[in-house]
Length: 92
Image (cartoon, rainbow, N blue to C red; front, side, top):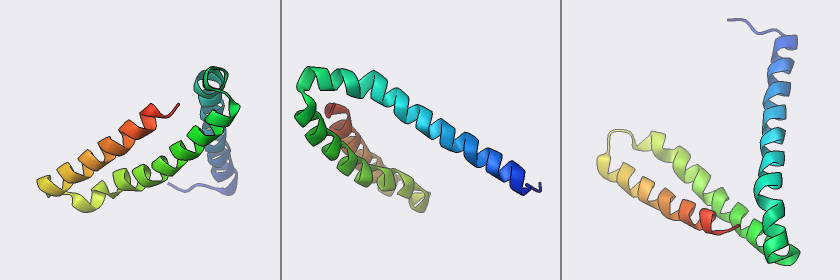
């Protein structure tokens, strides 16, 4: 399938819009109510922590492709991701 420039730009615009919509929804549904509950300063400490843990958790999850075929390696990887994800879920 050949994608010309206009189609490529359209696909990129739709993808960017989806990301922005998701971020806006996250802020409206989760972050703003949390700010009211815990305060603005605590929300900033929590957001920084959340981003730091996500920065480790995402590559950990993505690295599963290198572990295909090894049950033990995949189990360790998923256990690590689960621990990181648990930390992310605790942070507002």
